[in-house]
Length: 355
Length: 172
Figure 1: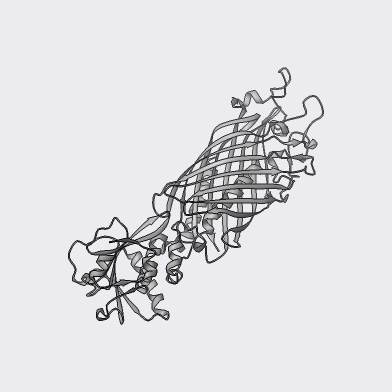
Figure 2: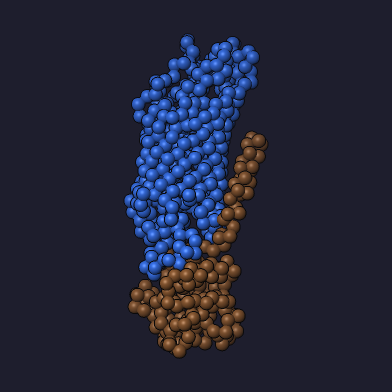
């Protein structure tokens, strides 16, 4: 899940950077020097070849917070008391566990830079810093309530964007990149599994441990209505040193921006995402016996599923070079390979500026 | 949860404090309006006023707009005058100038003004109504466009170059 969040944010930053990259001439001197023909070609929305920024560099910072709480099996809710195995004398199955994560909080800070090679080609680099904590309850003595934390840098992403089509009405971009396995997959903490620190489950790791490939097609309407559509995927390859690979994810999203004022644009969005389960398994987090998984998050099959989220937010371009975007999204439908912790909400802030 | 919300609010506040100041001065003039200001400079370059109008010695540009746009136009004119342009432009507020060669209106003025008698009147949008308007800006497919009233230009003996006319929507 941390990897999913990181990727989503990176793509969001990448997409966000496109618009901020395109900020045009900003000083009176620059406008005074524009010829008649240059003016005629320039776009109010700052997205033509002539409107590209004086500096080819962009910078963006994104902070995103996500909370996972409660359980779903498919689209059916499961109470915590159903998922927690109550101990001797009660039926143990593949759907209940002696340890139960109750709340998972993830905070991701993504720092990204972009460079415009020319009007049609751009390159981006980003690195996330992830902080996460999970509250648990369990039937293990001395571990009835406990919290595990992990933090550190995640997987760095390098990507290239190419403008496929650009007319006065719309723009199409294609982005492809590589996610490098710079995030740790060896995070440890004190769990009821044993005394001292042990290997933590997949959710608490900071990277995928594999070379992954993000791709995205995006469409931006330049007509009367300001909306964008995006189709993206994270394709993962091979297996990491712990013999597993996180699931691929695929998403479709759309955003409509309202022209409240020239500089403030509220927006509404809708996104569909499918993510597959984890392939392989980290044997260090399992137990010997008939029931090898002490918690649902240690079972690689109980990851992935489908999700539809609604998003709202506002983008405030508070100067010619800075824009601040605040957003809040909440799933309106989730169908998960469960029992699995469900996403409660995500919120974020993005600050982008030209360098 | 409460702690996280407080943390989020602190972040928003921090960013606003850090960056709002730098953006404040330029915030009120949109790119669309800046482009219109730049067009006005080009209109002056690509149009010819009668010899006896005095425009060749000192071109008088009158602006009736909000202060941010006026200041931006003023900065453009200053930049223009620094360059190797033959014509020096003097900018002023329409209501305070005794003579205007070109007058830009963000909003209309109802009373009749003598200083506009021989002026090329430019309107910021099709929504602005002003008598004797010769040029009106409008937007199409996210671009700034303009229309020319050739008859109105002819009345004041101002000639627009062919380069300018080929980009304009002509009203006869």
